[in-house]
Image 1: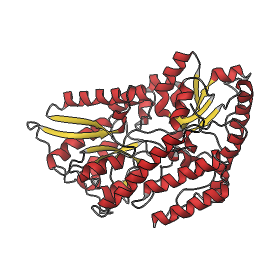
Image 2: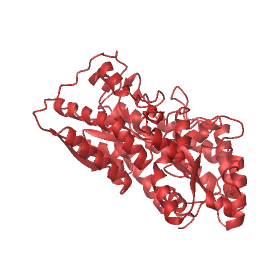
Image 3: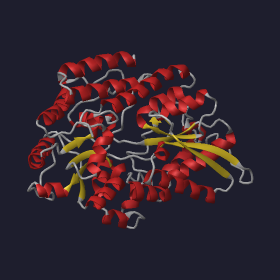
Length: 454
């Protein structure tokens, strides 16, 4: 793997830019509102004697192996429980989940239910035409969905709310986890059970010792490359910075605190500790046992467990490191389920599917097989269906602990949200890996991004 794989990054950035430019076509077709919350919504009652066919689009279906297999199994079980509903499942066909839905909307064949990432929430609610579930399902229906024997975690359930209304059901996500190859620590003379990795300075120090023993970079952080903006937001917040002001009017990643955050990783790269690879290269290298410390989503837990078993090395996990004594503020990766059906029968069928895919039964499969957080985290408590699994799988515990400290992945306002992400990713990469003056690069990027959200 080349240490400067710029072409894959450029392809993804280009796709994001095209999706952002295409967004203008649909501008104004829907608008969010903060209407009073109805107790009972307008959702039709589904006649069990009538056949209904709906389309479900998911980016998990585009990932072979445990991801697509798990979702396909859940859909098969849904059909067994709802024989009158046929679900045509299709993978997302572009790097932008909203861009994929948008393309289908323009072609007149929008999916009934789609898995979208949280950075697309503003666009989904204001422009893409996602149904307002507060109006459609009503307060009673939403309370029932988020409640039950194993209710949604309080920090998770409102992540797809927009201006007082619910536009999606939080579905699968994780917090950023510090993955560790314990065997590489031991080979470098470090005890992986006791070594301090609580701060980024401590990570750098441990990385330097391992790099000295192996002769190659020992740390990889997907937050600082294209595709990692979701966790880069958490790094900024953990160091006192924001990517967007609370009133959503001012870009913040040019601040002194943001510059200091990026400088931390520039210094780590300069010390020869941080690997310069794209996100896929980082994940694959860690799975193959070539990197000692890796920051990424817990959704890769299953893949890393398989890699550790195949390579005969020991995998463990820690919480995200801190910047000195400042509190860690993890942000979530992942997605929500949005409904685009306009036909009453399809809306009713779509709501049944959304409830099924976020049920305790679904999270039992999604968490144990893939590694995503069970958003109904009471399932992991004593007596719950995931208690024994959690006790036997300590890898999930740092992720669960961070769920209660979670701050949302911020979506940028306007139709150029993807371009803002592109500007930020390019600035961080250039600052960390390619010699750009960190302060100038980040402040210039913030100025460009500010013009995109006006």
